[in-house]
Image 1 (cartoon, rainbow, N blue to C red):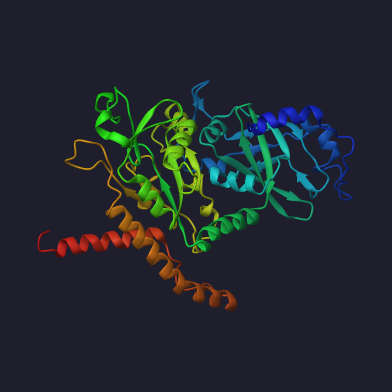
Image 2: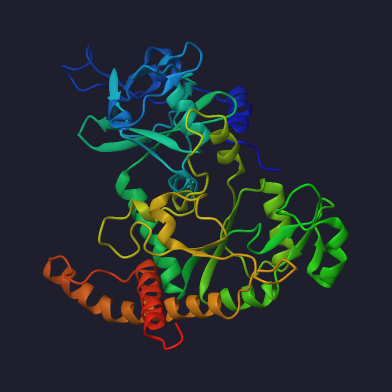
Length: 426
C-alpha cells in the first residue's frame, strides 16, 4: 500500500535527525538582512513566515468570497513554516519576506515533479485561505519564485494535502519544460499520439435502476456476454467490439482513460477492458475528486476534466512540437465536462440511434478518423523535422508550424462537411 506524502512526512518526522546538517553562511555584508536556507532555519523553521501576494493569480478573476464571514477574501496570505528538510546540497536560497504567487499549475506538472523523484524541502501549515482551498480541490499546485545568492531562480511548488499541510518542492522551470519535452518525444518516438477515453456512456454503461444513464436490471439479460462483472460486484455493459477497437487503437495511440467515476471504479473498469495491461498503457485518471469539490465550491459551473491534469505538454514553448493541446485527442459523449478551449480535441460519440439497446459505434467512423489523423500527422512530421533542424542550425525560428493532431482533425471535419454539401443526396 502506498502512503500519502503527508503520511510519509509524519512517519519520517519522528526519526529525522538534524545534527549532521551543514550550515551555509550568508555572504559578508548581508548577514543581518538576509535569511538563507540552512541549519539555522532547520532548527527554527518558524522564523521564515513569508507573505504571499495573490494579485497576479486573481487578476481579472471573479471575487472569491470567504464563506466563513461572507466577505471578499484577502489577496495577502502569510505562510507559517512548519519544517525545513535541508540536505546540505541545496544552493544558497535567500528566504525573503514577501513573494508574488506566479500561478497554479494543473496536476500534469506535479506528475513531472514525482517522475523527477523530487522530495519536498519545506512543510508549511495550511493557510486556510479560500484560494488555497480552491487549488487543493482542483488538485493543482501554486508556485512562487525563490532566488539564490547568485541570482539563480527556482520555482517553489506548493501542494496541499488532506492533512492540512502545504508541501514545497523546489525545481527550475527549464527542468519542467525539459521533462515535458521528453514525455512528448517518448510518445512521438514510438509513432503514437496521446488518446484519452471516457468510460461511462462511451465504452461502458452501468447496470442498475433509478438512472436513465444505466441499463435497467430487467434488460441486462438482452446484452448477453457484453455484460461483465466488476470486482466490487457491480456490472457494466460493454459497447460493441470495444476490445477489438482497443486492440487496434493501441498500435497507433498511447491510451489513457479519464472518468468521473471514483478511482476504484476506474481501475475496475480498466481491468475488464484491458485484463492483460497491454491496451491502456497511459493514466487511469479519476476526476471524481475535482467533480465533488466543484459542486460545493464558489463556482459550480467549472468542468472537472482537464487535459492539463493528464499531460505536461502545455508547459512547452509556444510554436514548439506538441505544445498546448496540439497532440491529445479525446473520445467522450460529453463536451461540457472539459474546458471550452479543449472542445476541439473531442471526438463526440453517442448512443446508436434507432437501436433499443445501448451501444456506441466505434467502427467504422471513429476508427477511420483516428487512422486518418495518425497517418496525416506523421506524414506532416516527416516533412517538418528537416526544416526544424535546419532552422535550429541557423539559429532562427522555423517558418512552418509543427503538425497538430487537433488541426488535422478540424481539417478533416471541414472536408467531410464540404463533401456533404457537394453530394447530390445531401
